[in-house]
Image 1 (cartoon, helix red, strand yellow):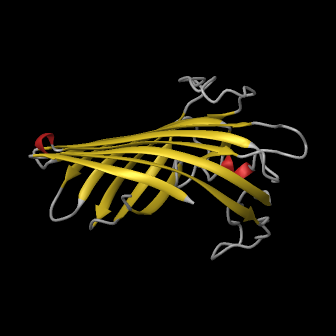
Image 2 (image 1 turned 180 degrees about the vertical axis):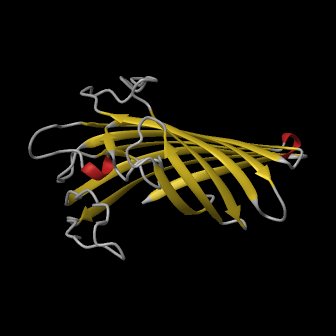
Length: 248
């Protein structure tokens, strides 16, 4: 059950949209166990194993706020949102946690030749009741690596209950719908014992940060082929990727 509101302001070449939403949802999660132990085409390459998901039931309160700015006068697009999620412990359930997320995306075009964009996301999760009967579900933790975050690293290579992710892109608009991109991904996930969502959210540094650099080319408006290299190690350094671009 959710309720929300949207406000729109338009002034010549500038559009602002503000949205807020809050609600309660209840769900039951079935256990997900990875039993895959075979490979496709290459006998020595197994599929990357998924993390087993906890099963149980939970009732959550979720509140979010979002701002979308179409600053056409400056050829700039801004999308920022925040989400706060908390289990309602007065209901009978298996999980107990609270989680916060903040994300901002900015894109700027220069003379229809170059595109600069940056996506920054900060997440934090902490248990409310760390007893054996109520825990934080592992699928609410931050998983880094792979196609969703750092493509130079293997899927779920490092996880934690605090984390951030940043992607900076420089694009050159070529012929038709093709665009050539230089992509720098950086991020980190780590474990904090604090029950305060904001405490230790800045506990990351240059020495422990994971980074990867990639070069890509868009195919039409929806697809991109790219190759990425992790910058901290030469162990399995290159990852090839075909991406489907979906703006939401």
